[in-house]
Amino acid sequence: MLMPRIFDDDFFDDWMRWPVNRSLADTEKQLYGKHAPHVMRTDIHEHDDHYDVDIDLPGFKKDEIELSLDKGYLTVSATKGLDKDETDKKGRLIRQERYAGAMQRSFYVGSALTEEEIKAKFEDGVLKLNVPKKAAPKLPEKRTILIEG
Image (cartoon, rainbow, N blue to C red):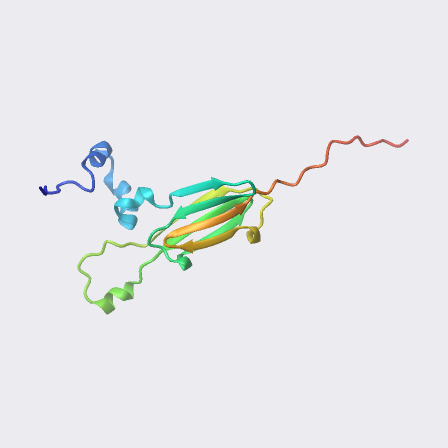
């Protein structure tokens, strides 16, 4: 039996958030829909010599994703934009539920890694990273300096 839906996506989610200012809570929801809490979900698997990192980025294209490494932090950024001219070509816009926006997530991978050592592959909405384990360069042991004279 189908019941009419008078609340948003889930009655209990709405009840637990009430009376919070809904305009702030819905900003992310407008961009990513009811799956907003599940965007950029990450799995990290440890191996002897590397880590496998799988990041869910559904709905993004390869050219909308950027990886950067700065001071030991690997940052994954994803930006989604909509072409406003596209709606004119397709006809009059009656309702728009897709929005433009950006998100990012950072992971500390150590300052000993370089960009060339991290391998990335994007397929089926999942960004797969291979991050090698690399120990920081060892500092020389404490040694005594002889004073002349």
